[in-house]
Length: 331
Image 1 (tube, one colour):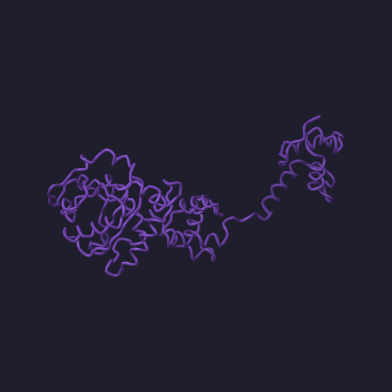
Image 2: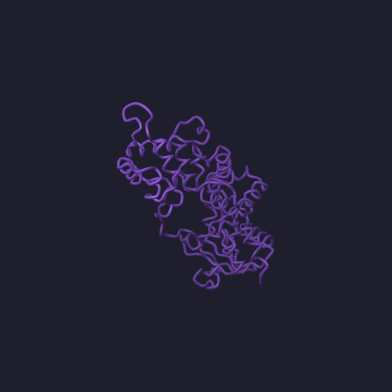
């Protein structure tokens, strides 16, 4: 006697066996034993897929039974996971919080919230862009809020036309422990420009916790930037051990700070890749050509909070703020 199989759909091969066994005169109970299926499964299969009238009435045909089953599966209502309310929530997180589909799906999974995969979100975004369904028209431009939408590559310039910074310390002399990202306090710094290349923001970024501090600036003079850097260091509320930045003359007063400042090689932004990456996220809130004269300090603080409460895949979808409080006061 064959062992009864755990529940799963009858295969096309099993339906062919049923047809043959019925033609050989086997009863439904015998067929169930031979196939290792429950007798009710066989009864249900034969009754559901045997025509009651017309040509071939009361004759079970495996190919017809398979076709009927496939059509029923296509027509039966499906459980919809990506509901209108979920779409509206995803829309808000992409447009207002500037989160990527991967971060949305990952953080929802970590929080045990009901959501969908990032592949499903991307598929929906592109369907909205290329389709014209009435219900999706309000999401048609959502693709423009994705981080890499419309990105263009820049040409490189190997010649450094900028002036020299006195007492400049090269990144080559930076301690190895900074490269290891094992401690809070090793920072990267950069200036974010706005419309007509006017100064807009000064960003300080922690290499370990990925915590970000922003200050609105109105000038790139060395004395002015020095005061802003000291203000940001005081805001950190922990010991700042090093700062890595580029060769902008705005940082010419680096030697007056109470912290070692290391400079990257000319046109080597990858040597301070963490702050460059964060500027890429910042640009989703303040795009290039933003007129920072119209941006208030409150606007800057709001965006700073959004950056520090933004889940990161690197931290298993925890936020930089969570990481900061985890490590900031460990000496």
